[in-house]
Length: 117
Image (cartoon, rainbow, N blue to C red; front, side, top):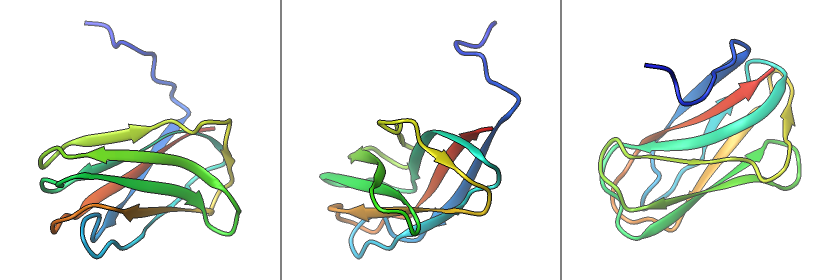
């Protein structure tokens, strides 16, 4: 069975653990392993989130928001993604900051980013 999209061999995915994407939110930091275009960012949650929360993605030290991920409920293992609204390029060893806000409950998760170089 063919894949719905061709996946380029020059694309990498990097991730980091977010200790709290619910109540008492804590930012998660993702290392950029290579220079390239940021094609997708996302969050995988560990438990149900009540209400709608947002996770804002920024590049550390650079003004402006790269993308905003809307986390609308869901259960453990739910994946929420966003595509940067403009062409966003990152360089090796930059840091992406995932800052959650607005959710309730004790929820952790994994924040990830795809970079095509």
